[in-house]
Image (cartoon, rainbow, N blue to C red; front, side, top):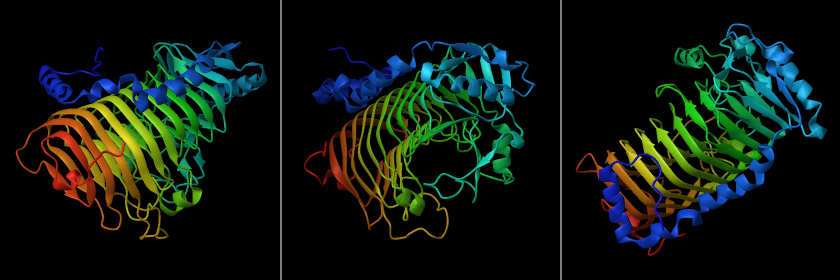
Length: 455
């Protein structure tokens, strides 16, 4: 059986990986049998054949008066084109073709049964004027804007209650021109919570493939209350100091596959969420069956679950992920008031390089929407496993800061080898219990309490 190693691996890392392989045969038992790969394959087999098909009609944005000079505002042209495409929904839909050039636009709404195809060197360029970003109601599972009370700016590309939609092309670009928004955030001059670059709400059967998403004002790709989402071959970029520019945030969403994707940004590369405190608890829509396969992550906060997770998170599986230059490699975060649970998550075949903390859990993270949260609502964090992980130039192996009211339970580490920068304080453990085998450096006693791994 041939071993596939994802990402760029230097010789020293390969030696560590070889040690793990010789110590345990488990790596050879994963591969295509991993729940992440099986889950992604299932999502892809259902969605891609239909969503990658040629639509019976193709229209160019230029047909509707679009001008590609990077100066002319094309919001009306985009919306007119998409409204026209909407009339063909029962006839197989249509494709909106974006030729080469810079197509400046404000926010616009997508429609069902459409393909947005960006040609090579085509750029959808976001307007920097807040007047071109309509203000909409807050998400019901958040109760208010994530940054400020009240409403929020909509996303540049927005899909509400739509289905059978593809955003694809020859690696064209959607550029949020986020600098003006980041500066407003830093100067505290925002009127409302910043908008995402691309957001799907209450939608299904979504494909985002072979495009580049850059400089989002806020979260980049946000499927919320959405099911059956395939994200493949996507590049997501933002400066490493750009605030809150998460890569992909599946939020109260299910059957999501993120595959063969590169993310270099200023916050979480992937953050699985499900609502905020009492609003998320009341809305009660979990994120589940989220699969990550073959991702390369650079200079971000790695892979996160939470902190907004009050609808619950379960069945999140990741395989073949390379993380470098991150603050944390894998971060599970919650707080009093969140309630709900994070359970049944696995992370396998990871490479973590030049990172602050490889594994980080905290029960004391984040803020609250208002004073109405229940300070006695503690999250249950259980059944989290890490297998076949190698790390180089990591500052700390693990930092686990639980709370006595709800300790982290059934945390499992198998075949983990980390080369650390320091010689002390390898692990910090409070209110956690679990199992470990073939782990270097040896974990804290709390991770040697259980006799077997939950999985």
